[in-house]
Image (cartoon, rainbow, N blue to C red):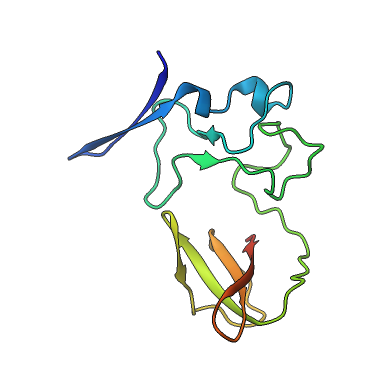
Length: 143
């Protein structure tokens, strides 16, 4: 009773993940009613849903997400599911911009993007690096 079990299966295998119940964000915490959610686990799927390859199965909640603090987590937003929400980003860092694509739980260098190109793929990040290739800051690029 103290664990949440997350099972993922395909035609040939099944994988189970175990989480402590206190580490998983509760609905009232997601709604901003009570408790702290920083560092808690959010499971964005209902039982029986299909997960695509390289999709995240859980997320660790960070208050640094690009969600205004006046909008509680898990609020109902009037935006179509999967629709991009764009905004202008000021980098506030100096260096060279390199692009990366999210593959599972890591970023992979992405070189197929050109200046002025319209971004249509999910999971694209712009990373500003210094002259020694160290990351200064990263921004998610919405489609």
